[in-house]
Length: 220
Image 1 (cartoon, helix red, strand yellow):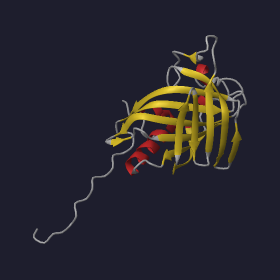
Image 2 (cartoon, helix red, strand yellow):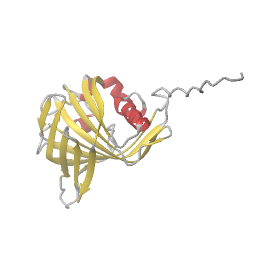
Image 3 (cartoon, one colour):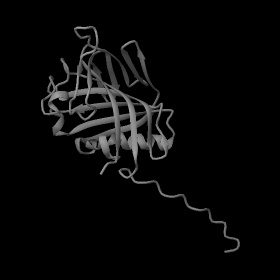
């Protein structure tokens, strides 16, 4: 029609759970278990050593995408609280997304970490009963020698180092069916501090783990 100046409408964003995604990189985790986390071998059927699991995690994304959005080079921080056996659910969780992420990458990472994107992390949608929130934050994930360090604003300050084996190499729980990945490096926290969402946690010297991840979705 002559004189029609109506702007074309943008296509609606695809629903989480329908968008192809993949992230590859490294995950580190520190919890309050006094010895190596029993969830790795028991697949969540053995209770945490302290009854309730409290922990933080950091993810370094070496390469990845959510739909057409590039996720490579971004970092993510997680806060987790699990009242008993991991497999029984009723988790509480919060996510921190790298402040460098654009809007599409932020939305994609929140969908992945909340389980809404399905695929590898889809179990979060079932196990997490209360998602405390997702926010942007300056996140530093760095490696010095064998030690990994994570700094998430003022919320999480952590450092973990692999436990040395008999030959001086790393101790690895290999070929597991753990959801994060089959090979989990046993580590210990040099520093594990959380100050977020009313939680004040200090897990220095407690259980930690390192995992090379290759997650994707949404799957069938």
